[in-house]
Each structure stands twice: as structure tokens, then as C-alpha cells.
Amino acid sequence: MMQANMLRVRICAIEQLTPDIKAFCMRAIDEKALAGFSAGSHVLVSMQHGERVMRNAYSLASSPLQLENYRIAVRIQPQSRGGSVFMHEKVRVGDSLEISPPSNLFPLDRTAMKHVLIAAGVGITPFMSYLPEIKAMGVGHELHYGYRSPRHAAFIDELRCHWGGGLHAYRGDLAQRIDPEKILDGQPLGTHVYVCGPRTLIEETIAVARGLGWPEGHVHWERFASPAPGAAFQAYCARSQREINVAAEVTLLEALEAAGIDVPNLCRGGVCGQCQTELVAGEADHRDSFLTDVDKHGKIMPCVSRARGARLVLNL
Ligand code: FES
Image (cartoon, rainbow, N blue to C red):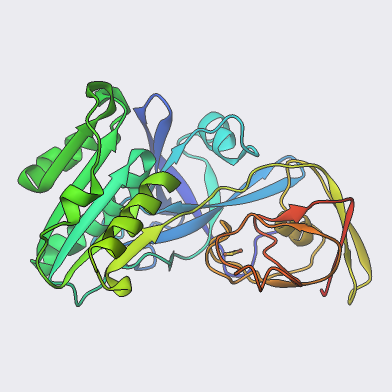
């Protein structure tokens, strides 16, 4: 059964962008315009695989200025829990899927005098929605995009065509490396930097910006970690008195949802804080980027975190 706030879309095109990234275009089933969104938004895509329902967050990689279709890009991760493999191997043009309305955890700051975007690999996707909005705003911008080799450069032709001079490309196969220090040093006052890509690139950019004295509010990053599998465990929901089995490849959040226990969620990647749940007993394997060390006592983010032992007790 479809969740109340989800909408049904039809896949209207699939494009193999690189050996491991596919783009999926989707339209509303009734051919109406889709809901508006702001640059940096993501949707949750619901994937029904047999009895199991997975919901993964994907950035919208289409223009917020056209709402005929949404586009997402998915990198296949064979070692993960199966969502990206499902998208790559099972989803065909003409199929219908359920998605959530767009939410934005990585918005553009509209007060910025200039935008500097730093992306590596599939981290380019949120910036595909940024660029049309930045162009419409008419403010200065630079895009620094690192990729392994030309065949791994998702959206590169589109970027060259529309962003020519503002695009700085870095090829790993030529030992070209994004250097945040070089990029950020000397930028005009009022510049904001946005970074999306591997954890190391994000951490380096944040550290460099801090070192150069950039205001914290001028540094933005997106770090969606797709939840990794782990060992199976039990979760006991104390208020509803339900014992839930969490299988190895299922997240605690998915197991709770499958049992009809709703937990608010937005990113499903351990960053937004929406799914925070009180942990009554048991030791959590914290995998989120939201809870502070102090908060980790007695709280858990079930979208990514699991149990260290055999059982957790939750205040649900
Ligand atoms: S849903 Fe965002 S932290 Fe869990």
C-alpha cells in the first residue's frame, strides 16, 4: 500500500552516464507537473523488492525551473543493501515507482555574493539542480568537479555545454586533484562554498575553510551515507510491546516501517536528525553524522544505526 505522502511516477528515460552511474527521468503518472522544489533537494525512492521495501534518498539532478520531469542519478554499489542494484537491474522505462515529495537539506544560500561548488564523482548530482538556479540569480560561481577519468564523468557534456568557463575539471587518471586550499584562498568576501563527494574531500574542505577564517555559515556540505548492512538483531519496542527482527540487509528504520511503526524521517542517511529515537536499553552501533557523543547515550538514529549486540529496546 502506498504511504500517504508518497507520489507515483513513471520512469520516462534511463541513461547510462558512466560505467557505474545511471540517470533516471520520471514523470507524474497523470502527466501533470510535479511538485516544485529548490536547488539541492532530494526525494526518497521507494523500491519494492519482493516482500521488502527499501527507501533511498537521491538528489534531484534536474532543473528546479522545469517540472515536467525529475531526474536522479544512481551509482551502483554492489556491496550495499541492494537499493542501487535494484535501480540498475530491475527498473525499466515505463515502470512506475513511488517517491516522496522533494525535501531540501542542502539549499543554496540566497544571500551569497558568489557560489563555489566542489564535487567529486556522483557528488555532482545536487549541483545539477544548483546550476540553473545560480544562473537565473546571476551571481558569480565556480564549479570544481573531480572524476576518475572521462568515462566516469557523469553529466560532463551537459556541464561543458552550459557552464563552459565556470567549470574546472580534475581527472584522477592524470593525477589532477581538487585542492580546496587553492580554490578557497582569495575568494571575495560573501562567497559560500558547497561540497559534495567522499568524506575525505568534505572534511578537507571544511578544515581548509576554517583555517582560512571563513564563517561557519558559509560552508555547506552534503554527506548522505547510504546505510551499510550489518548483523541481524532484535529490536523491542517498549511502548507498543512489539519484538521486531532486523535482518542483516535491512535497516532498523525499514524493519520498524515494515512492522507498521512509523518513525519520522527525511534523509535516511543519518544527517537530518528526524528519525531520532530514544534508546532504552542495549548498545547501539552509531553510524550517523547527527548525534553528538553526549547524545549518543540514550539515543539512536534508526535510518543508519544498528545494534552492537543481539537486542535493543526502543521507546516506541
Ligand atoms: S532520517 Fe535523517 S537522520 Fe535518520
